Amino acid sequence: DADTWAVIDYTKVLAAGAAARTFGNWPIPLRLFDVTVRCGQDAGRPMADWRGHQRVRVV
Image (cartoon, rainbow, N blue to C red; front, side):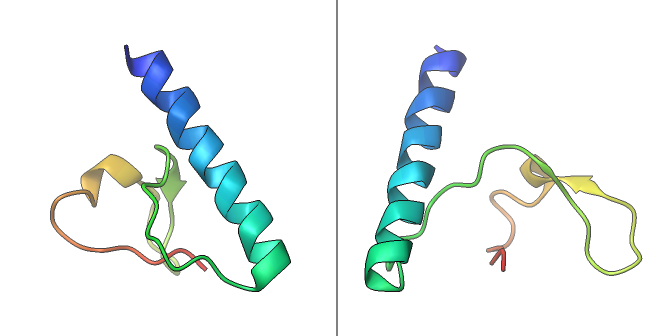
């Protein structure tokens, strides 16, 4: 079940990237797959730590 949702999330990210290239943006928020995120000099934290508490904009 988790693998199925991971594939669906990955497909959404691919579609968002293609739309961003074509149209210049993607107005619908996407759930980022679980990666380690670093802010500045802080140690990395898993994306799961941020979910449900704060919106995260990845640039």
